[in-house]
Length: 294
Image (tube, rainbow, N blue to C red; front, side, top):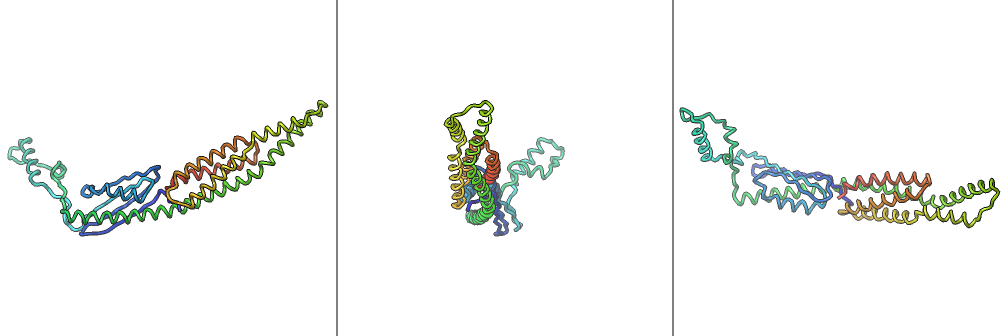
């Protein structure tokens, strides 16, 4: 079964008074790309998380978000009192307040560099946090894969429906090929006979046959029909095989469109051209859907 490149997965757990939430989303992309957002205290896991994502997802942009909510009452951050006193003393000196004190907004003070410092957990806590985050990441990625697989079922059904539409019109074209040459021969002979009857002349039948042969050769689409049929079979096989076949399907779709355009350029038959239009519409829908296949 083929997979879509669109999906969502989530993992959530509360450990030691901290709620960890991991969310992963994926959208279309010709290649793999990871966009990772997480708190600074967990940033050291970014490389490991990207590797896990790459192992699970072959194509698409994966947006990864980690949120950590402290519900224990213990602070994630600490205030460097020495740094704050240094700022206060320096600001008082600059302001030259007569009584040696200055009004300093606390919010502005806390925004100064070096005042608020993250609490550095010990090694055991860091390892425990790592295990929790990676476990939730695997859970979210597994959900994402399942989501992409389910979406892939819908995409596959639509692709196969359009392949059937192409095959039906291909049969119509194939059934018209011989009749087109015969009809051209009949029209040409009728036209020539009427012209010669007026002029009371005769025409060499071999010359007429050669003209019909030239037309048949110029409008011959047997090779295009054969190649288009082969492309349809290859496309179906890829859908049945599954896996990361998006790029291959995209290439096969381009080849199908090429053959359809060639058939249209060679044919002057209304019925054939109408069937080609139907085929090209179906190919266009396939092309759009293939952009979402992994």
